[in-house]
Image 1 (cartoon, helix red, strand yellow):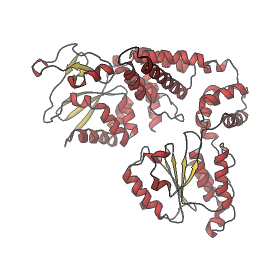
Image 2: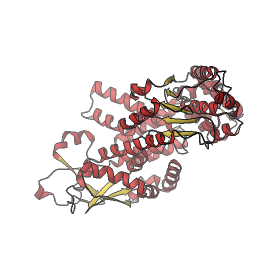
Image 3: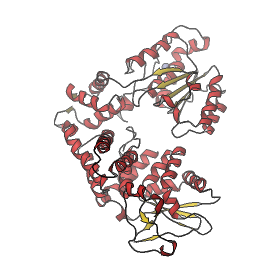
Image 4: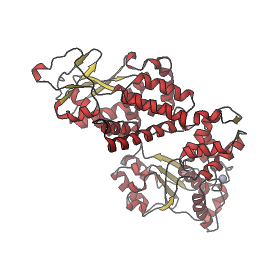
Amino acid sequence: MSWYRVYRPQTIHELHLPSVREALDRIRQGGTYSHAYLLTGPKGTGKTSSARIIAKMVNCEKNADHIKSSSKKPFVEPCGACPSCERITRGSSMCVVEMDAASNRGIDDIRMLRERINLAPSDGLVNVYIIDEVHMLTTEAFNALLKVLEEPPKHVIFILATTEFHKVPETIISRCIVIQFKKASLEDIEHALQAIAKKETITINSSLLTKIAQKADGSFRDAVKMFEHLAQGKTSITNEDAASFSDDGVKVELRALCDALFSRDAERVAHIFQHIEEKNIDPTYAQKMTLQMLHESLVAEIVQETQKGKAAQIQSLLSHLAVPLDPLQPFPSLPFELACFSWCFGEIQQVERKPESERTPQKNSQTHVTEEQTKSTQSDTRVSLVQDDHHETEQTDGLVITGEEILIRWQDILAKIKSTNATVEALLRATRPQNIQGKVVTIEVFYSFHKEQLELEKHRRVIEDVIKQAFSLPVLRVSYVLGKKENKPKTQKAKDEDLIQSASEALLS
Ligand SMILES: [Zn+2]
């Protein structure tokens, strides 16, 4: 189990942020609870841990008489040892329902909550509903949630958490006690890391801990993950071990990564990712630094304008690479790597629009153009579906759309899929639409596990529904083919199939 999970605070006293510790302790001392809390602040600062601690406190057997009699004497801290505390720690309590609004953002999920809400707690005292990333809920889901928050039963607490407070409707906020989380100070992070070093009996000097804390930029989770990454089986960490951690070495690699991305050189990108792995560079940090470098280049380009269209290209690359990573996953860099490769493969290849009479399939007629060229000639271009050494622009049988139109709108389609199911969108990022025949759209997939996942009926339906909706079609099927190996960067051949497959399995399990 990752250190972040092992060393997650289990009591109010153990919480890292002093202001949050005080806020929760005021709830404890007040001896009563509100029906709705909104925890807001940056990622990795302890919102979920705090939500679980509240859940544990109101369900702990040490507080049972108190909850039942509604006396207002202070609660005691969760004991961590009673069956209820143990169930919540293990994640097996029926009283605590955790929902991630990033993937369950619809009205049906909130309706399900509404149906459950009057049920008495089955293995505890208070039912606690934790809704993470609550700002992702749809408007209808927010309205349904609001109804529940208006008159919650006595035995229910809602704990909403968000990293984007401004996206939560005022009507919801007004019904919650708001607890503000802020970025952790260097001191707070160092203190948390020192405690872990002590428990793991690892020697590390304080200047290295400071470096980790600086890189974590206020996130306990990122800091702990970086520390764990650096420690890997060692009993002491020297300055030498941390050499890979030096900004200079990292920056050289990441500058090379930016260059390779500008020239869409997938093979070089694969090489650089190998170096990043060998040098033990934390993936979260690698992504963050890459985005920072690109951002700096963008600003410089806007001011100096060295090359026409360069700023637009950087902007496009930045938005392509800004994918969320989960440092708790066993292969946290996967979404970032896939985003880099899909950028290099350049899902959409363009050819100039020709008069209908000249649009016969020709060998090597497709030309790869950059984003800015695409933009300048957008009204005048057509997208060609590239299949090995020839391209097809066939009209579909019975459909009024062409494969070209799917390609043109592929990014829009992905964006719509993302709002419905982020996992499916992540899987599709590393694919490309290949052709359309009859009512079947064929999509090229490069990893067998991705293919299996995309073929699952629930995933297939998400994709088909979005494409059907995008083109107002009554019927459409999607099929997948495993892509040609040579389409992938050569240096990956040896390891990527197994690595990415197992990582994907872990991500989706
Ligand atoms: Zn307990």
